[in-house]
Amino acid sequence: MRLVVFDDYRVGVLGPDGVRDVTSVVPGWDPTPPQTFMNPLIAKWDELRGELEATAAKATPRALDSVRLRPPLPAPMNVYAAPANYHAHIAEMRTDPNAPVNSTRELGFFLKAPASISGPSDPIELPDRPGRRFDHEGELTFIIGKPTRGVSRDRAMEYVWGYTCALDITMRAGGGHNEERSMRKSFETFTPIGPALVTADEVGDYHDVHVQLWVNGELRQDSYPRDLIVDIPELIEITSNTVTMQPGDIFLTGSPPGVGPIKPGDEVVVEMDRVGKLVIPVKAREW
Ligand code: MN
Image (cartoon, helix red, strand yellow):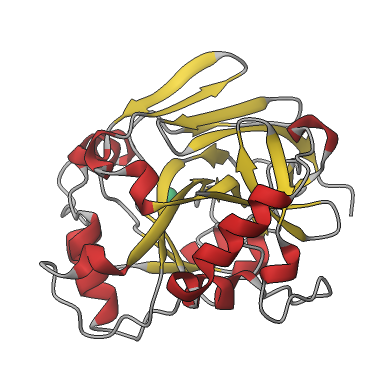
């Protein structure tokens, strides 16, 4: 099943004929901030799925291009991310060939502010920071379905509820600046996600999900998650032995090679087999 959030933060099931409103089934739905309503829906998924399907079947579909898509998960409790999880990406970012290699294996996870999340209809807004470089990172992202504590890798995939596409937009350190990674990646709109949340059964084996990203039509990233240094089960093992992961928490699995700069006026497209496609314009922040 594919879930979207649309218009005034209503919840819909996305099918071939459009969006079907299932908001009435969402426990505690409230469109006012902090908009945490998707998290209990995911937590109670096994119990609510049948009712969602029945409600969707009776609803009148609305054409996808007639709604405004919002972030399909507006307020996860935690946004985890893998810092350097493809060998080829580490190689392209290295400036000192003699420095030790720090991958996700050595570094573990970092956090992005959930407030940096934006949706499929929102532009990336670059803040005015003269001389700084802003990069795109297109990353397969998974969603946790139940409280996940101390889980070993052999059981970890049982805790994956689904997947979505994400961009991990990054202001690079440099030019005498060396802010914390979490801040450089947490400007508002620096975590576009969507267009839908896709349940794990629709995606199947994540290893062969083709991850591609274009800027202004030029293919920049073209990889498969089978090349992850730390795979999804081990990301869950590492993280769930640090904290209890919660239903609706998301995890950006790390950027493939091909990372490059973006500037106002660009258009970023990221597409992942069976997961979805985001088309996101880049503009200068106006505030
Ligand atoms: Mn990243």
